[in-house]
Image (tube, rainbow, N blue to C red):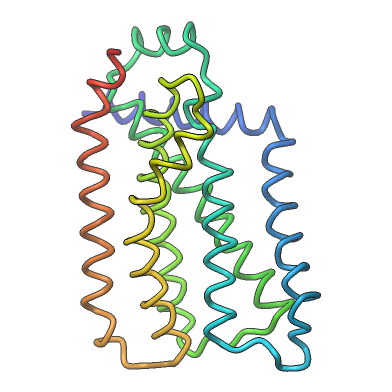
Length: 224
């Protein structure tokens, strides 16, 4: 067990080093978030109160969704066949997929917090229950990371991974996104947290199912 955790830590460290070496990708994601927020500010002229809370919430999750796709789509696509074969000799498929999901979770959590901070600073913060909203961001980061990492692994085996990534991710992300929108809207309205328990349980169940499927199905995908 200790050896397995150590190997997963080494794989996650490898992901971080690769991302840091190619800083243009990370800088591009940060620029995308800031640029999207600034475009929303110019388009809706939010300082005049023309941006309603429901539009504020919807726009934020749209920005976060496309940020997640851009950030996670390259998880397996950027890996060369020779490097993947080398990983196959070092670690088990479960360790590889869990390490990539763990790294993408951390990356999405940072991007979500940064995006929320920038978005709230520029367009104002109408959220009444901030802790519940942050919990929604954390659940969304886990769901996006787990779902899109698995889809990236599947798409990397195709000739046109970018197109397949977009086609496969939509039906997986849509139900998760609908639940996240509902929970975050309850947080914005300041409703009693017990009202959101059902949706929170659904999101946790979706995240758990995707994580379980990743562990069970990825070994078959990896052998191919």
